Image (cartoon, rainbow, N blue to C red; front, top):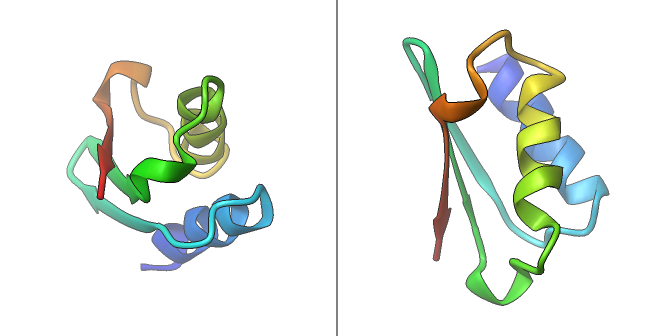
Amino acid sequence: IVKESNIESILKGKGFSQCLCMIADESCTVSVPKAELKKNAPLIIKDAVLSQLSIDFNNITIIEV
């Protein structure tokens, strides 16, 4: 729960108005508003996740809401 909260805080600090992070086993899912998914947003999101977790890059899923 702490790591999920940390990732959400990092993303809000990087300009995402709302986000939700869910960690399960060796994967992480991040939900962000569709309107805020700019060209470099996936890299920003994955960088935030990898700063808190040691998981494979391919195990990070981004969902537009």
